[in-house]
Length: 371
Image (cartoon, rainbow, N blue to C red):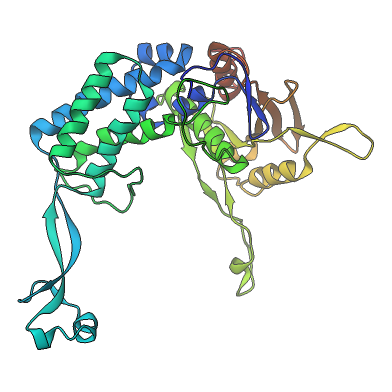
């Protein structure tokens, strides 16, 4: 696996020079960085591995000093006394009562929790990724500590299922780092010095990454004092009368990104698409995809309310990765500007940042070339 990409590659039919930049923008970690660190990583996103390793080692060491968090794990065991709940079916089937024993299910307090196994596995992943000898030694020490405590490994962890109490909230930063580390552990399209299992880079995977990267970039680079940003917002149809079961059949509307500039009350609804911006028509001419236009048109017109001024002249944008050519066209349809824009992911990271910021910050009171 190579940590650095020198040439462009194609992922799920989309040409990308450096997929690490999208991973950086999409990560929660990006939002925790200072401006100087962000610029440094944007210019050389491959350094994200080294920085993530340094922060992980520092956070893991602090966690060991405070002692690892504990949790309860479910165990099943045949005992000669009751503990927890009796598994009656298993006890009867095995004729355990005749032997003076019963099968019980009970919880045991342990440090070998899914959370700690996830943190442990991140150290092994870093050991394969980092090249710096000092960082490798630090990772090996962390692994040795986990092994001494007899804590296993797991690359899967359900953040939503686990409960964060006051003592557990201190693990959130470390767990966020671990999640980033596992996302970084993907092979490039080129041959390197190490091998790794190839990630299934499907169209769905890349579409979700492109969407999250756009949202993450907007949250960090558009000042919260001037911009209101929302993602994954559900839009509702304005119904005047409806039959009993209409809700079972009406499709849901959910936007990728809504950006609103408070000074001029300009609202822009952005829908990201990870495919070609055009398709060839029967006349062999490239045309914008009608289903994408209909979708964005529904987002704009279905939300118009006289009591909500920005909704009556909101801008809509369909944002695509560039394939073969850059396209940036717009049209006004029934008081709504609709933009068709591409971002060239084969360009240098500084240009990607500049062009993405230009596209997202277009509003009535800010020039389109503003950075």
